[in-house]
Image (tube, rainbow, N blue to C red; front, side, top):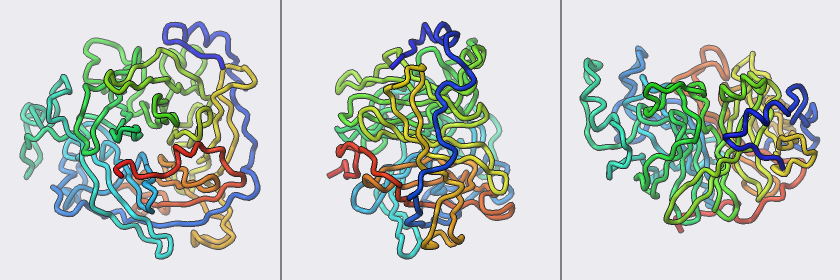
Length: 422
């Protein structure tokens, strides 16, 4: 397996071919894949008793009556039929998400009824100990913002919002603490099981987006919203593999605009997270595609969602690949094998209500989880209050799918669903 160091990335780039490297996926998913379950959470679902939101969106329906349970960008199966699902930064960007609380929700999909129940046990992220070394919205940022929307007043409780971070991926360590990958930095965030920060945000060496609070006079080399969309954890819980959603400026300049970096991060029980300086390369089928999610199957295999940025009738490419980190053909890229085409999932039992073929044409599909060797769960990020996935005038909902694979995964038993809080 050829590795790239941060210092040597440009040199490596010049040695790699750009037309066919890393593209090793068949045109169609293997026979035997089928949809086995579907449940839906309505778009207008709000956390009971939560504060209003959407003041900064400009949406004529805002403020919304509470915090929407939406934007699922990570999922973790607890082993009892329930799941933790992580909402991203809120309403799409830093400017319009200041009143959206970063949150993890607890849900129970019922495949018999097709409904999703929101359960107690979720939490919001916070920084009570002041570990974030810059101003956050709910402690100084709001007060310095000047004119505010009518009806909105500044809170001061150091809970974290979509103005502070854009969390997009989540993993739970063996000690029960949570790691989040985010996009403004991009950073890694470490919290306890109640969402309270345990360490200062961990920056990515040599990479910053225009939204980074530490950019200053520096030059961003990663576009907005292209940070750590996916992040896997090794079976032993000692390594994280955060993966960028888009190519860096250096990679684009070297003709590697279809390349995404998978970083190697080592976890230590007392010293936290350390970027080793190494990263692997994943070649997308098109430079216009993006990462949806990344999780581990075992010590060397991962699942990746690769997608286009279209929805509804225009959507064409939403796929799940099995990725091998060992680079067996020595071309400098991880290997790819197509597992599921989400735009054409066989549904012989009519589970999805669309006939014998089910399509999942949402703009962002950002969640995959392994339930057993032959079954995965897939969820979309509905980008509340967006429309378009199921029709131009239809509000996007959160859908939960279970899909049977054609062949069993060689999944490490330590990565199968289990409740870390037991």
